[in-house]
Length: 316
Figure (cartoon, rainbow, N blue to C red):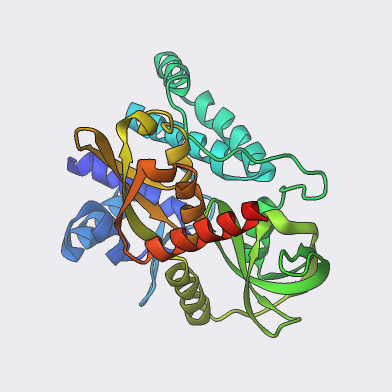
């Protein structure tokens, strides 16, 4: 990237946040802090009204705006990938807002770029587990949760517990959002349990954003989110499936965490990353003797137990 392009990109970055540190700029463009200071001075000399907070970073004075941002073809193409992921992995509220944002983005593109984008949109698919419509669970809350996270507002909702089969009212202080196991999870401090809790967003009902605000501890939030992710790390599983059977699961495998496969002659060796051995074992049982476990060994006793349970059930 030449210096003129970098100065323009730095100016855009400065408009993207309230305060941007010199270290953030240096890391983004892989330049030294000394070069950052020189670039910032050049922007000031060009008439850009920049301010600085000691120990924090740089900011643009209120009232200054760049002309409409122009996207490169590659940047616009990247947004198509983002839009496809959002279509398959978010709820109705996010899809609606992102759709409106894409209209605005497309409005500043050149005619040939718009045509290229339309073509690309028709050529990209993201496989996702179909979400069944359920009027009891509107699945339309991610946007409200995001607002609560930004404003540090208390949320109140009814939560369905799979364990008890009942709904109970919860008031929580939202700490973050995490996506794993095919679902979005609200990470929050639960006032009922007086402890951090993990709530599946698609099990929330009658969610309300309360006027009450709360103070948060960034260190505490970071530790809790790290703990949740660590507690839901994916397990690597390798299995060998007869080639004749493997060709019938080309779609199924993607729902099970498929990563890669290797041709072994009469069989296909497949690698998966799975959140639960027990759940994955139930899927493997359906293939009978056509599947062989390569690793981990701890999956074998689970398979054996499932087969014994089936045998006992049907012999009755």
